[in-house]
Length: 364
Ligand SMILES: Cc1cc2nc3c(=O)[nH]c(=O)nc-3n(C[C@H](O)[C@H](O)[C@H](O)COP(=O)(O)O)c2cc1C
Image 1 (tube, rainbow, N blue to C red):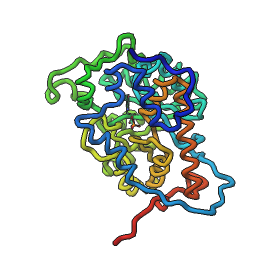
Image 2: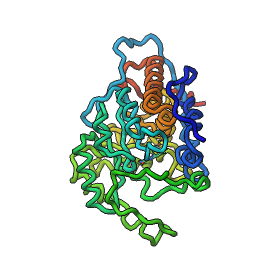
Image 3: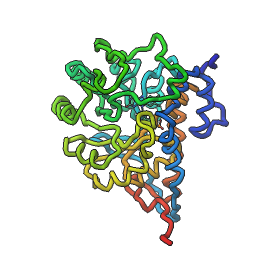
Image 4: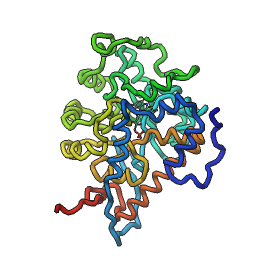
C-alpha cells in the first residue's frame, strides 16, 4: 500500500534525488512506471543525466557578486529565476491536491508552471491560484475547432505563453509502462479536453487514423494567427527544425527529448543544445529540459545557450512526497544550488553566463 504524503520534510532531504525514494513509497507500481519510465530501452532517459555529468565547470575567484541575482525577462515578462516547471499530465495521480498543490508550491518559489493539456484540473482554476501567470502546453487536437476554443480559454485565463508540443504526434512505446499495465486511474480525466471526441486506439500506426490529423508546420501558422500569446515550440532537437520554427514566427523553442519518453536512442537535450544555439544566434530564447537535477545542470544549460530550463520528474517527486511543500522545496533546492554555482563560478547575473563557465580540456 502506498504511504500517505509526508506532513513535513525530514532534514536529511537535501537534494532532488533525495525526493525520489520518498515519492516511490507513495505511488503504486503502474503509476511509478508511468512517472519514471522512458521509451524503449531507456537509453535516452539515462543519457539525459550522463551528458550533464560529463560536463565540468571552471570556478572563478574574486568577482564582484554584491549585486548578484537570477532575474530574467522572457517574452516580455519578468521572472525571478530561470527554472520553470515542465508540463506533465494528471498531477492527481501523484497527490490528492493535483495541479492545485503544484501551483501552490510553484507560487511560493516565484516559479512559472506550465500546465499540461492533460492536466486533471481546469486551466482557469490553476491560473487563479498562480502568483506567476502559468504557461499552457498545447497538444494540437485532431479537432482544430476544439483546439481553437481551448486556446481562447487559455488566453482568457491569463496564461502568459502557449507551449506547443511537437515531438509526440503519437505515444512513444514505453515498455516499462506496458509491462506494468499502466492505465490512467479511474476518476482522473483531462478536464480541459472535455467535449473532445477521444481518439480511439488502433492496432497499427501507418494507414490508421492515428497520423491522419497529426499537426504540420501549416498548423503552426494557423495557430500563430489564432493567438497573440507567445508560442514556444517544445521538442526541438534538430537545428534545421529550430531554424524552420523561427521562420514560422515562434517566439521561442524548448530543446527537449520529452524526458526520454518518445523516441529512444536520440541524443540528450544538452548534447544538441550547442549546435542549436549556434544556428539560432540569439534571435529567440531557447529553453531546455531533460535531466535537470542540480543547480549546476541549470548553469551548464545556460552556459551552452539556454535562457531558462524546465524540470519534469523532480517536481512530481516533490508533489508525491509532500504536496505543495515538496514542490516548493524541490524548487528551493534548485534555486539555491544555482545561486551557489553562479557565485562560485563568478557569475553575478544570468547574462554573465557563457561557455567559459565550462572547463574545456586543452587540446593534446
Ligand atoms: C509523467 C510525465 C508526464 C509528462 N506529460 C507531458 C505532457 O503532458 N506534455 C508534454 O509536453 N510533456 C510531458 N512530459 C515531458 C516533460 O514536459 C519534460 O519534457 C520532461 O519530463 C523533462 O525531463 P525530466 O523529467 O528529466 O526533467 C511528461 C513527462 C513526465 C515524466
